[in-house]
Image (cartoon, rainbow, N blue to C red; front, side, top):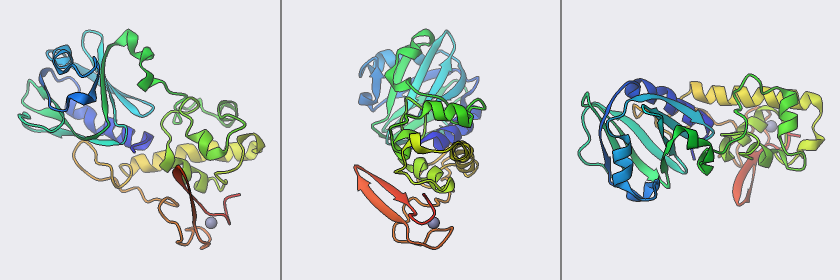
Length: 266
Ligand SMILES: [Zn+2]
């Protein structure tokens, strides 16, 4: 499932392909992805056609396409999707395509439960899909603020994934962040020292930024179809040696998989 780094890579690579362009027409072949207005492909297409794309923003795990006339189209990847720029109009798609007046296009395919919502800008805050806590990359996210945001009674991994506290960190990057911070995923937030919060705040930002620079995780593809090159430190490495100390990486499955090194993550 794409998390903050993949969304940020999508935003950065899609923006130059779509910003300033006029949508000439919208093709919807995956009607069930249109959630607002619910499964109404006609209203969705008519609501977008003729508008200029002003820009793209990231909010938590969603992309917000700002359109002229105070309208926004929100795209949530959910389990994953490919949002790609095309150099010619899309006539057939398994998903959703926006054809621009300059004969280029933006095509959404491989939409695993992905959702589109069309809304007036002033109604965006009412969309549940955009409900999100603080942005982990925000400069204002200091160790002190982090300590106040993360629920004290939760275990660290669950707390990092709590979208009401921080937006955009999920199952993958929570493990990576905690390995980098040398903290056990099972520690209680309330038991962390000030120095540990400092290190956690630092590693949240540096882990996410490292992945953004690498184009996201390997399964993800950006607007040009390029795969990410982020090298996982601990994810999917159960039974293999820890990259830091050579001890065996452990994995527990409790609904979702958690990977950690019991030796250096305390
Ligand atoms: Zn280790």
